[in-house]
Image 1 (spheres, rainbow, N blue to C red):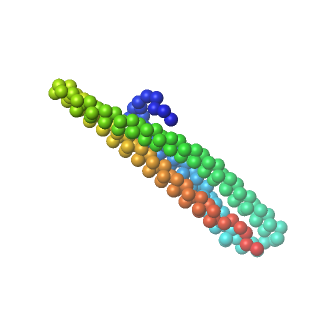
Image 2 (spheres, rainbow, N blue to C red):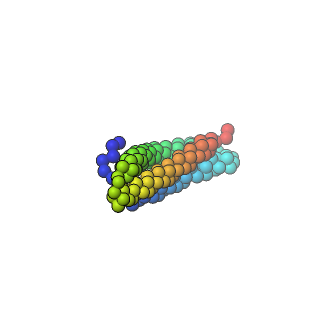
Image 3 (cartoon, rainbow, N blue to C red):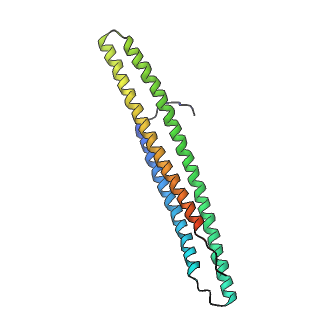
Length: 173
């Protein structure tokens, strides 16, 4: 991904904030599905299964189908969330490239300031060095924030997958 033009800090902050909101929303949706599966598993454990064999067989089929539907629903949500995380990784890569470019600019500005003999001109170039350092700090902080949010979301998704797998919906025999 080439850096075609500078981005506004407000735009980067907004994108990071929006990605966090979207991650939280998608994780919340996945959490509801996991809780549904856990409820199904709990229900199966509590069934007395003391009715007729036909009724019990139908109940077993219904609850197993519900579990299958729930698993498929979570798989869809997981896929969408992983796509979302890929977008977050691209943002992190973009921020990292921008930070690297600013580091080079900072070094070039500092080199130029060291060669300029006129005091007021040198002071202005040194202001540019200061601005570039602040920009790099902002980009690095934004990348770290985005990366932390993504990794936290990935951990929560992994936890949901473990809980979904652990929620066994298997009627007793």
